[in-house]
Length: 166
Ligand code: S3P
Image (cartoon, rainbow, N blue to C red; front, side, top):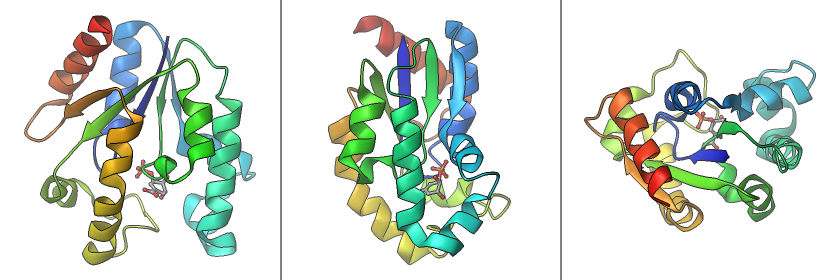
């Protein structure tokens, strides 16, 4: 089983993934961590500063390629994976893609500066990205779970129920 979690920044992918993996007896992979590794330990912010979003997306696509044939895993993706069809093709290979969907107001409450996000510098920029990506998350996922007002346990249980109903 390969489960791929997609959704906007602050939708809860990073929090849900380890719990989901534990409950299903799967490994967990955080794509952003793999990107940092692939960049020789450079942080996400440094990758953006040195080579812009293009450099980041290239690394993201390469990591997705590495994950193409992985099995028994839950993959927590960065919010921007849907911007590249090639990245999504690799991730979606033999996978169930799950969208965590979250209202923008909730995203704003969840995102704080503890984790620097180069594409979340201000609310207007983030809102524009959010609008742009909504149809892409919908299109790429076969399971859609809303997270607003739900505990992490509820979200994870809903994903499990949906996956088992497929
Ligand atoms: C990004 C989301 C981030 C990270 C990078 C770009 C995006 O991951 O991959 O800052 O384009 O939405 P999270 O969704 O885990 O915050």
